[in-house]
Length: 324
Image (cartoon, rainbow, N blue to C red; front, side, top):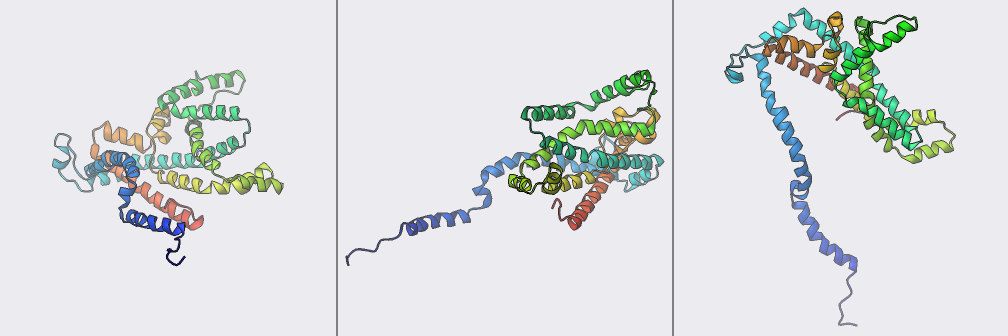
C-alpha cells in the first residue's frame, strides 16, 4: 500500500545497531579493553622489575673500590682498575678457555640429544610406554647436582666405583673417569646429557604436536617411510623452534653454571674444571673482592650479548629464522 513504509532488511538493522558499539570499543584504549591480560602480566613484570632490573644498579661495584661497610653509593670510584686486574691474571684466560670449551662441547653433544630423543618418542605408538618413558626421562632434571655428584663418585671413582670394579673383574682395568682431564671432560658432558636431555624434549614434543597430520597422510600415500617423513616433514616443521633454542644456547657460551663443575671437579683436573663461575667464587667471594666478582659478571654479560646478537644475525641471514 502507498501509506506503508518499505520494510527495512534485518541485516541493515543489525548493522546499524552494532556500528555505534564497535566504534565506541575502538575508541577505548587497548589496556581498558584487555585489562584482564594486563592484570595477568603485572605480576611477572613486577618480578623482573624487582629482582632483575633494580639490582642492575649493583653493576657499579665493578667500577668502585667497594667497601661493604660504606655501601655502594659511598664507596670511592676506581674506574677500570678491576678490569685491568682481571685481564692481567693468567688464571683468568685459563678459566675463560675452559668455559668456552665445556660450553662448546655441551652445545655439540647436549643440544642435539633432546631433538633426537623427542623424535624417537614421537614415533612410539604404545601410549602407556610413551608416557612411562617420558616420566623416567624427566626425573633426572629434578635431582640436584650435589646428589648427582655423589652418584658419579660412587659409580666412576677409580678405586671404589662400581663401574671400575666391574671393569677390573672383566679384565679391562680401571678407567680414570674423574682424575684424567680427557676422561673428566667426557664424564662432565655425559652427566649433563643424562640430566637435561629428557627435560629438553618437552619443548620439542610440544612443537611436534602442532604439525599438520595431513602432511603425514599425504606422505603415506606417496609411499614415504618413517625416516623420509622425519627428514622431509618433522624436522622442517620444528626448525623455527630448533633455531630459537640454538641462538639462546649460543648466547650462554660465556656463562656456565656453578654447581656442575664445582661438584664434579677435584684438584687433579683443575686445568680443565676451573671455569668462570668457580673462579668468581674463589677469587671474588671467598676473598671478599666483590669488585672483581662484579667485573667478571659484567664481562660475561657483555660477551653473552655479543654472541646472542651475532648468532641471531647469522641465523636470520642464512635460515630466515631468529628471535626477532
